[in-house]
Every structure is written in C-alpha cells, then in structure tokens.
Image 1 (tube, rainbow, N blue to C red):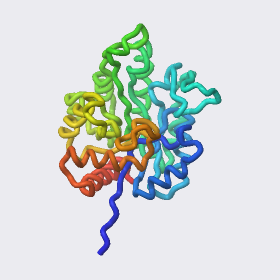
Image 2: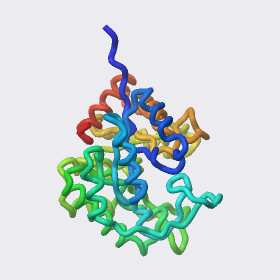
Image 3: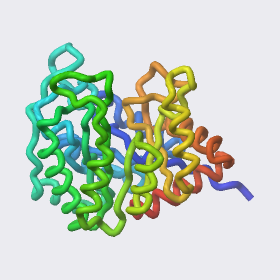
Image 4: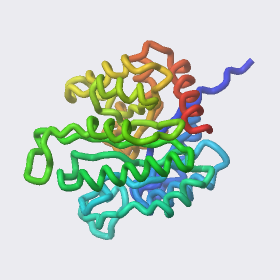
Length: 301
C-alpha cells in the first residue's frame, strides 16, 4: 500500500506581497507541488484584500488572514517587497492607516479567511509615542476576532538597545505589554498564534496559559555563528508542547538554510519543519503530521 505523502503547513506567509507580483501563482504551484498548505497574512487593507482574492482561487490549501500590522498604524518606513513603489529606492513612507472595523469585518467573514492579523505590537520600528495607538488598534482586532469567531495572528517585536535613539525606545519589552492586553481582553474561543516568536521562556509560558500556539520560521535554521538567537530558539522550542507548534516562512523574508540569499517562499517551509523535527527529536513525517494537525485545529481547515 502506498504511503500517504507528507503534508506541510506554512502558517504565516505573504505571497500576496509585491515581491511576488510577477510570479505569485508559480510560487503557490511550487508549494502545492511539495504538499505545502499556506496562509497568506495581510498587513493592511490592500494586502489583506489581495490575500483573500488569492485564497478564493483555490478549493483547498490556500487561505488568508486579514488585519492591520502595528507598523501600519503610523507614518513609517516599509520595504518595497511588501507594498511596492514606482521609486527605485528600497523604502518608502507609509501614510499610516486607522483601523476600519467594518471594512475588516466584511473581509473576515469570507470562509477563506482563517485568522485576524497580522496584529499586535511593534516596539522595534516605532517609538514610544505610538504605543497607545498600537494598543488600541490591537484591542480592536481582538474584538473583531471574537466577533467573527476566528483566531488572532499576532506580531510582537520588542525594541533592542542597539537601536537606541530619541525615536526608538531601546530595550522595551513589547511582550509584557502584549500579554497585559491579552489578559485584559476577552479572547476568541481559539485564541490564536504568536508568529515568529522571539520572547523569553517566561513569555512563552504565559502565552501558553492563555491558549496560544507559536510559529517558528527560517531563523531557527541559522548556524550558531550567525548569532545567539538560534540557540535561544532551540531552548524555547524544547519547552513548548508539540501540540502548540506550527511552522512558517514569513516569506519573502527570513529565508532558511540552505536557501540563504534567495527570496523566501512557502515551499522552503520544509527546511523549517526538518529543524523542528531535529529539536523535538521526531522524524520528519511525525513532525510534519503533528504540525498539520495543529493547523487543522487552529484554522479549522
């Protein structure tokens, strides 16, 4: 009897971004060819709508999340890989977006939408003056997730000392603020996912207690000489229960080994699952199967 092929999940990717404008379909075809299912995650109105439009073209395997990323709540700089620009420079200035509950609710009610986000807090790119607006926008998206009965897709990034400046709060811990907000709000029945988790073991324990899952991406494949982060990820991955772990690419960013230097894409999530299997001491088929079942439970796919 033939074995069932291994199925993989890229729980957080951005094939609707400008980086894939010319070959998004071919990129998705490569993913599906490797039995990779994926969730295209929106970051503002345009990328959220595009994620839904792409998902509607497929009967199964391609899904969407819709929401407003914290960096889009204020005027700030963004890589052209995301929204694109007619300019040839690598960055442009975003005008910032106020969260439109009715607009996102209409998108979120589409059956191809499986999560609300990318939403949360970003203290790496934005200064202290934005914290109140970020928190309010995040709370509004928690309310939306609760109303439509879909989980959150959370982005959380703290400030770091080397970015110290009058505008960037050095070393600010976004996770403590994020967890405080989550504890103060009524969460959806399936609370959601903390994508690209970069917090401490204690942060992870608190989020586990709140019912959250965690996605890990290409950074976990980096060699130790690339920095201490890879080792830190190993430790937190060992701590998190298997039934709370998902894989992601965050494409077009953070390309895993052995594809460093290339544009990331969902098909490369296989390398992330290989590393997760190594850390959790599972075979590749076992790890992939666990992640696929976790995705089914979280996204109801």
